[in-house]
Image (tube, rainbow, N blue to C red):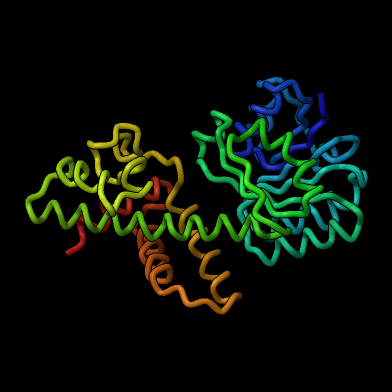
Length: 294
């Protein structure tokens, strides 16, 4: 049994922490929202009243935080001041590459083993323990982190040095954000041309245009029963989260000097989707905005 500190018990962090508890580990969690801490305690974990309660005398610390500024604040002047040097540091937040590398560099200089390990798989994957982790960090750090990640996920990929996990996540979600719009526009046009969603799905799901946004997450009600479109677009991955990731892609493009014209256009569409009330809906609900546009 390992002692684990878990900071950030939101929609993703809480089920991830629960899986560590169910695997027999002693997990102490902290979140700014008291009911999130209570959710961990009810599952058999322990609740911390402050960050320090989660980082002293533990084998590993896992963070799942909203933005790079939060990661920087929690680690610099927090975790890096209180945690023992043999503590494995695992940041599962989705943040910008520059912050991930900056924080990771500071941790390394102080003698810590740290990885950035953003996830794919949504809340369903977090609950089921089937997440994909895209991991950046040195080989030894990856090997130390992997036993904990194996409990929370089924596909653990070492993407290279510190920050490469974030780079992989940003590129992956940029593809997803663009492809969801492409699928939405195609199915909206098909409807106006008199072609049913089921007929188009039967054709495209087994042809050259097939993609995950279509075959597993179709934004149109009907053909894919498990998609949010068949549950009033209740979020597995919200519009706000997709817009955040598309902004991270834009920032990475600027930082790297790479033009991303499709991604730029997609970001503008997701921002309009949020402005029209899509923030708390699943990001696939952008189909309705597209279908209703003239």
